[in-house]
Each structure stands twice: as C-alpha cells, then as structure tokens.
Length: 119
Image (cartoon, rainbow, N blue to C red; front, side, top):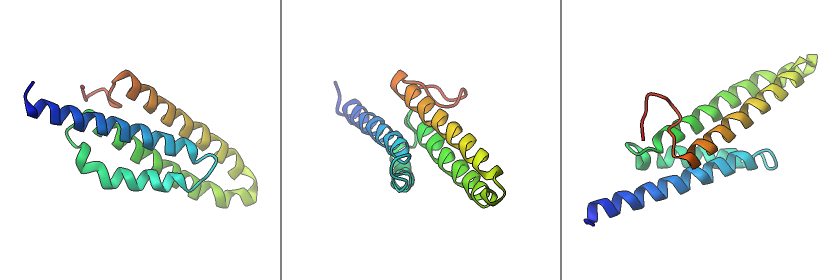
C-alpha cells in the first residue's frame, strides 16, 4: 500500500469522525443550546480540510441546517407574542431533527447528502 492512499484514508477517517461529532453537537443543542455554535464553528474551520472528500456534502448539509434553523427561529421567536411563533418553533425543531438524523444515517451508510454527488 503506498503512502498516498494511507494519508487519504486517514484524512477520510478523520473527516468522517468530525462529521459525526458535528451531528452529535447539533443533537446536543436540544439540551444545551450553545453546542450548535460550536458545531458551526467546526464546520467553517474544517471545511477546507474536507473539501474534495465524500464528507464535504455533509459539511454543506450541516451548515445549511444551521442557517435555515437560525433564520427560522429569528423569525418565529418574535411571533411568539402573537402565539403563532410557538407553532413555527415546533415545526422548525421537527425539521431540524429530521435534517440531523437523515444526515447522520447517510453518513453511517456512506452516502452523500446530495444526489448529484457520488462517494
């Protein structure tokens, strides 16, 4: 086995582990809200390291999940004064859980998050 394959294998293993950690931090944000910020910081710092690997799609998925959730909550929280905001917060929370669970399961199965990308 040549050294180049070993390095790529180690890089892929590290990227997969990092993707799992970020999904874990996203789920943990339901208990401790600040972990979502740790997750997004990791995503942005390590994005260059996963670029070109099969895990890049998971990082994109995680970043989009964060921003869409953040925007949804930023709109919904003020709407809580007219009570409809609570309904939207529940919907956003369910959508967030769906995205994190789907991403984690695809990661475990070795699948990309987007159909046009192939492992």
